[in-house]
Image (tube, rainbow, N blue to C red):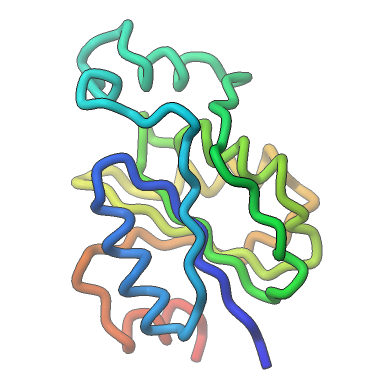
Length: 156
């Protein structure tokens, strides 16, 4: 049986809610990617070029530290990685997670939440940065995802 894990980073709660619904729909377990230093509203002010999120996204080598590492990844066949879209990309903490988790030989599905930005640029960026990973596809999900939408995405 294909065991599924939904790993997600959520700065404001939107991606968390979507991840919980996805986990319920695919019968998967949840793992929250939490930063050591939580993001404040000021940190997330994308209009401030000196906000924490702006500085991290401007530096492609930035790797925010994760509070808890995932230790049982070998128990899963399929891994969903969810995140909000920041500057068209996955937040740098997603790079930290990928680089510190043994994801080789896993089926990986990316999903993102966003008010208006698409996910395509973030998928292409992660595929280029991590060519050894089996990133199957990605999808922008809303909080109103349905079984039919997930089954269509997963080719069922």
